[in-house]
Length: 172
Image 1 (spheres, rainbow, N blue to C red):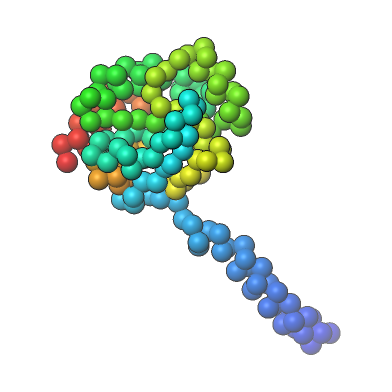
Image 2 (spheres, rainbow, N blue to C red; image 1 turned 45 degrees about the vertical axis):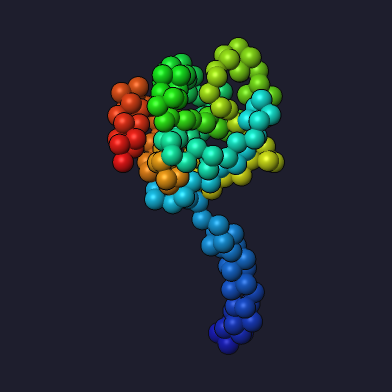
């Protein structure tokens, strides 16, 4: 009896190893970017314009992952707009990446709230980024002037925090 069980386990071992290898292959092949890694984000803005985070090298870039249903995001967006307008000519850029289920939701939201900072929908087939899966909104990354991810912030962000982070990264 013990011999039969051992034989069955030994015969199924190659299949188990193969399944394990296949299951972990995508994770090994493409890990998400983290602090200190080069930022990668290429997308088409809601207005149809193509954007690549590399075009903003030399600037501090705020990459914010948000959703139309996120109350914190909605509360912060007017402050982002104000900061964007006040600092864009001083080396600040930002892009708001929606994680909504559909692009229609983003369009409807922006019709009511016409923000002027760049907005993309993350699940557009033309969008390509190496940022980690967003598990909470808002999730914000700051990219330094060299194009490297310098900071990740999850949750509410005060205007003072945004200002200090920009000034710190701008002075590097």
